Length: 342
Length: 218
Image 1 (cartoon, rainbow over the protein chains, first blue to last red):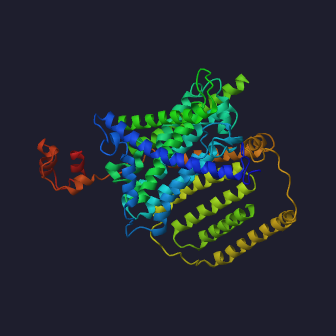
Image 2: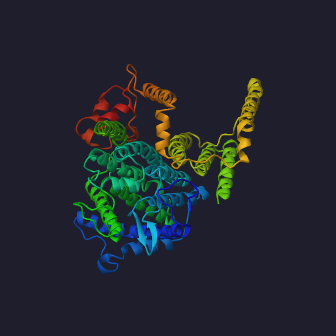
């Protein structure tokens, strides 16, 4: 069966595609609480305290209690808000985050009970562009949420988010061009296979640094969390949100952290490959990817506990005057080197 | 399946385009344009042009429309009524141009598009619509238009920077210090106790304005 919309690397029958999307959604949904408890525990340790330790063994049930509290709260909205946009905005954030999660490859095509299945949602020919397309739509989730709340804090938060996202999207996009030039393909599975000899974080070290810095800005994480700077803006674009709508924003934010970690793993750290030529059976591949992803999540939390928030003008001048020229130079030099080696 | 998606996208595109013109609130007009552009991206996908679809979303919905949303939500919230056209020359010229555009589109559609509807359509190459093919065409067959377009964009970017730069010879922008304006003199700040602020102001001439107090307070 051929796919209806576009050429993809490998297409399964429709029932496998549906099954895969359910499994990927379940995995994403159950990874977010793990990230939540890991973050709170680690932040506690970084700051010389215990972190949550009341609910369940060692406080491990804390995220479930939090989620239960959020979804049982009564939905409300301010009288100044614009009803349908106020409801639509968190849904946009959620949908785009889950859709973007589909391209992270957890392994190549494997044989499960006689049926070949690709261990990813979809292997699109346009690869990272798919991610950027959904990132562009995700912006409207934040923007509409802030605007439709009818509150100054929300509005300022969403405006900051808008400026920040479009500034750092450029640097993020340029930083991975080096990887694409080196691999000679846009397909994420083929990029992973091209890293068989050497993972790209060695030749593309500059690209990795620019990508990670821009990713911190794109996911609104400290030190770039200007969009929800609680000291200045109460809560930024989600100030007026509560209950399960706030939970949607929260979920989308942490899912975006996971997605960025997955993309960094795929592009720079060899995806499901193991170093030193170790070749494990194929069922290990998803575990390898998950471990690498959580290493990046740890890095995100580490930075959050370490660095203070930037000022807004510092954020802008850093993005445009430092990050973007470095990313452009990296692309240029990579292109020259690749042509020279050929 | 393809037919259903086509009609969803087509109706979305037309409804979005009509909404841009009809809606009174400029913010909703911009959102309607976003919906229109996303529907167009879906139409591109149905034509197997996945790269163009992704670029459509990234560039138009993600960058151009973000600027529109930015401007409109900052300055467009006053709900001003749309003014009727008063100039008589515009009243004649606008429908005329619209009619010309309509005729041009009709010629293009009737001339080429309709004959292809009843046919099967051309056979697609194996990796049709992939970035590789588009890149190869851009650097071989369409090299000159591609380079000219990129020069045009570069000139536009340089021009924008030139317009936005800080010009020499103009005064530094006057920034009033809100704290100094709000605080009455002699309310016990550090600057006053150190001999600045209130005491200096009381001995100074009456024309001493409050912004200088603000600067003293830092």
